[in-house]
Image (cartoon, rainbow, N blue to C red):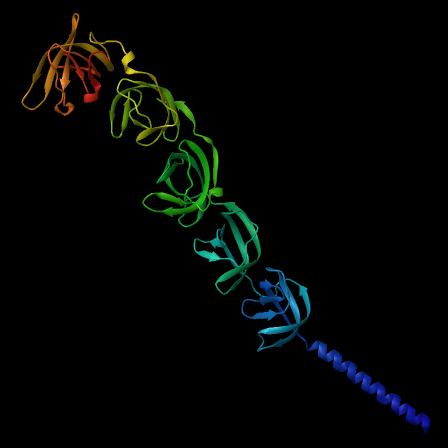
Length: 384
C-alpha cells in the first residue's frame, strides 16, 4: 500500500510539472511582437512605426533601422513592455520617392515639392536620390536610398550646377554661362569678383530672367579667371586686352577707338591712351585692370591733318555763331588751319587771337577740314 501511495504521489507531481511546463510554453507563444522602422530615439525612449501603427518602447534604438520587438502591449496598444529586440528587414510596405537631396537648415528632398526628411542621409548636396522609407507625420523617414547624378538642366524649383563667368557683382550678381545671363541671389555679405570663372550649385528659379538661389558660400567654387583674348576678338564673358585711345566720354562710360562698347571702371580724358584689361559684357566693358599709359598732352599737333582722335593747337582767327546757337571757329597754325564745330551744348566762348588746344575727331564741314568736339572739357586755352 505504501508503494502504491508513493506511485500516486509521483504521478500527481509529474502531471503538475507537465501542466506547468505547457503553461509556460503557452505563455511565451502568446507574447506579442511588432516590426517597425525607428523614427525617433532618445535616452531610454524610441518610436517604431510600420506606416500605419506606431508603438512607443522604453529602449534606445538606432534611427532609420528596422526592429522586431517582443513583449506586451499596453495603453491600448500604443506602448509595449519589451522582453526581446532584434534587427530585421521590413515585413511591411515601404514608400518610394525620388528627388534631389538638399541639406539646408534641416534635410529635404526637392521634387520640386519640398519634403522634410526625418533625418539626414549620406549623399552629396543637390544629387538625385531614390528613397525608400515611411511617411510619419509631416516627414519622410528613409530606410535605404540610392544616390544618382546632379541635374544639369535648368528646371524651376530644383537644384542645378552651373558654370560661368561673373559679369556683374554688387546689388545684383550676374554670370554668363556661354549663352545666357543668370542672376545669382547670394547669401548676405557674400561678394564675387567680376571676371572670375565659377561653378555654383543653387535652386533654379524662372523669374524675369533665369535665376539661382544660392544657399551658402560653400556652394560656390572659384575656378579661375575668364579666358583672355585681344580686345578685337573677345566675346561676352571673356577678358579683352589691348591699348586703346579714349575718343569720347559720357555718364555711361568711355568710348574707345578699339571697341563699340563703352568702358566702365576707370576715369580718363578724351585723347588719353589706356592699357586695357577688361571684361566683355553684353553692352559694356568693365575694367579688370586698366591704366593710363599716355596722356593726351603728348599727342602731336595735327592741325595740318590727321585721322581719328587728334590734338589741335593754334590761334583763333575768327568766330561765327548762328541764330540756333551753333558756331564755327577758325584755328590756324603756320600754313594750316581747321574749323572747330561748336555745338551750343559745349557752352564755349572763344575770342579772336587767343591760343587754344582742342581734342576731337577729324571730319569735314561743307567740304573743308573740321574738328568734331564732344565736350567743353576737350577745349582749353594755351598749350594743354
